[in-house]
Image (tube, rainbow, N blue to C red; front, side, top):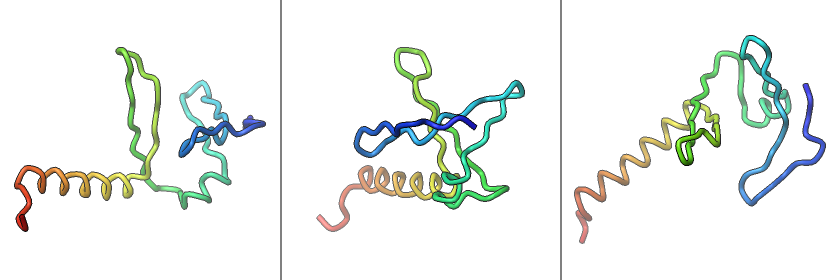
Length: 88
């Protein structure tokens, strides 16, 4: 699998690797990345698509369990905002 020779970074985000998509649309995440995030066979990833001016500009993969936690947390904050501060 081709690898980026130089990692590109802009604060919290950086290019870790270049990944090739084969003729069947499949790709392989590099082993060192899978190990760093604790990704194992059978784990689920959520694919988020970010669009700008009607065109897809970014794809984001998130471990499904992490996304569920983030959504629950965000919804809790939204609910608190809608209901107002019960302590104030």
